[in-house]
Amino acid sequence: MTIKKPHHKKPGKRRRAQASGKPSRAERADRHKLYEQSVQATDFEYEFVDTNFQRLRGREAHLLREDFCGTAKMCCEWVAQREANRAIGVDLDPEVLHWGREHNLSQLSEEQRARVTLLEDNVLTVETEPADVILAMNFSWQIFKDRDTLRGYFATVRGALADDGVFFLDIFGGYEAFKELKEKTRHKGFTYVWEQADYDPISGDMTCYIHFNFNDGSRLKKAFVYEWRLWTLPELREILSEAGFSDVTVYWQGEDEDGEPNGVFEPATRGEADPGWICMVSAAR
Image (tube, rainbow, N blue to C red):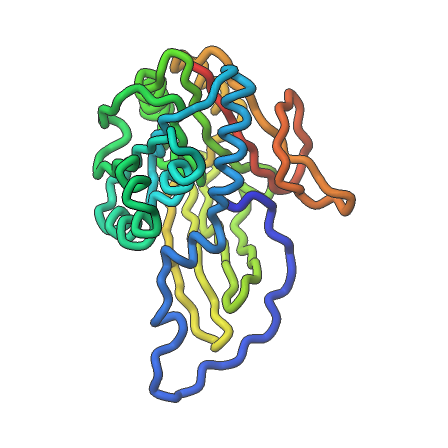
């Protein structure tokens, strides 16, 4: 998840890949590692969830379920932070779960690994023990394109929470969210490219890509492809309430002295008509 809105900076000139016979950086790239470096911020997610769960419920959360867990990086962050914490990761993709075991779980101690369970399963039907917290981050829940299916997923989540459990998710929007555009963000050795390739205003369907450009001039195109519906905040709040959640809170991101997003999210009842924003949302059972 990108916590701050991308800065609109030109990526600069890249050196052309030379015909040296060696594989290009794009050919050698690991797309999951690049994704974790450029999109995910599990330290932020942990602090946000841990702090706001305690604010809402007056106790620590210990059992986390991460839906659409991908490489399970957040599961690993969760168990590494506190000895009493356990995590369940759910994802349909066996390849990404295998990568997570090999690259993320392998970095944990044996005792920490024993507190992580990864399930190759469907979040619509998976059955797990009641969780204190369920997460659906990186806008992954937008894969559900019709109201009935999304409401059904949220109802399933509510039923899988402990009696005082809390569901956390994120959402993006703003008037640029409806545009077909590319945004580039420089990182050490590569440029992250977010492309909103197609948007249908009748259905709300959108197609997005993540590309990676490298300093040797090579490119990893369509490293990740997303077929989503672009839901709005009012729709999200309404459907969470229809699914039975009693208290839905929106957390709006503040700004630093230069007017840039500062990564600090506070409960809010009004937002601003920004071109692009990211919000966190909690839904209490």
